[in-house]
Length: 80
Image 1 (cartoon, rainbow, N blue to C red):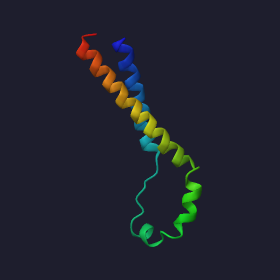
Image 2: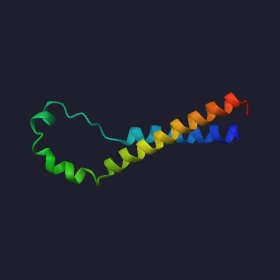
Image 3: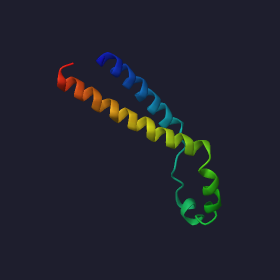
Image 4: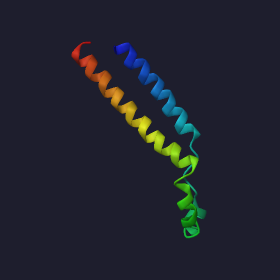
């Protein structure tokens, strides 16, 4: 059972790293602070973009990674 959970955590970790690498950068520098008003229209469409979906999926996969880490820790503490 421990081997299965460890392999599952490895797969989730690789998926998490891949998802993070596919995301675009969030920093816009000085131009983002000056043109903030014009960006409000674009932010409405941004919620449905691929980047937003990828960011949401990254949060879920990250949470799964943390849960798997806790499960492995509890299994090792119990001596399984």
